[in-house]
Image (cartoon, rainbow, N blue to C red; front, side, top):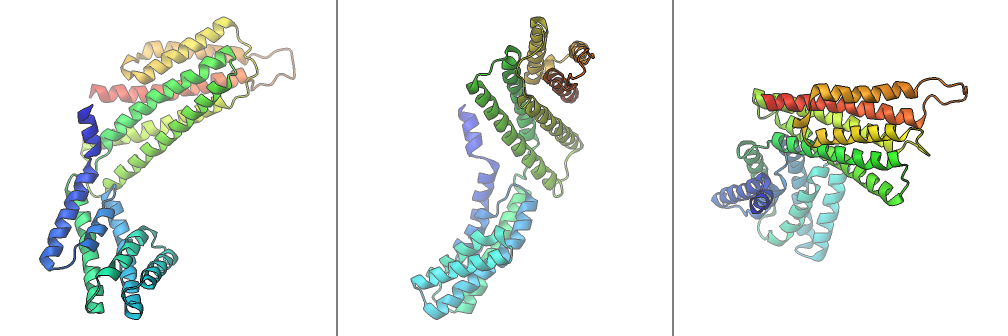
Length: 346
């Protein structure tokens, strides 16, 4: 547990930020420039990917130039006074916002107000030095991000996908259990909705990591094995998101009462618990057994669609909807399990 916490606290980004601050400070000391502005820039410029550092760096440089300009301008008119701080911050924010330099707004504003305190000599020279320190901070942070502990999210994505699949199985059990028992307990309903929302947030977070890794691949070529793993992770996330969609349909199916026998309810109940076990433990998957379980669901689905003498019977009854959604989830899960076991075998 201690090692886990230390790994979580002392992550790559923290190490790289510390190194960027150190190298930036050393360079500024060597050039006899005040390091504080360069250090501020370096700290905020360590992004999740090299691409983000470069893109935001392109925005932060002109934004910092704007902040420095306003600081010098209002120092010239009002010297070191409260109105100087106020006007420098105000006009820096307004200008950056109007020019769409949102990624550089914070750095520019901090630079602008911090300069008021330290400018005592030639205003033009101070302005040029400030641009120089900003450039040092941006370049050092980008170089550190690119060459020291370069971002690699594939392992984290794999762990997150495994947890997502496990959580999906648990959520499915929570839904089907009261469904088969026609349990309308409001607290259970709220618990299910909470788990469903939590699953969506986890999906969004993992999708963001996949985006980061795809962006990072532009600057660091992935090994062939890592590239295959990344491609599989993308496919699995797409399938889990589809499963999430079908689970949402299950939650929103307006079921007043299930017109199944007790045995049919028990069969579905056991099938879903078996599916949840596969999601928790992909190595339990056996293709022959899995296909038999899918066939049981399929037989019940076709039996539920048999026409009756009642001409007003709705073809899309709650029972048919539930079976259709479960079959879709079974098929999507099988695709994921095949990929998981293929990866384990290699």
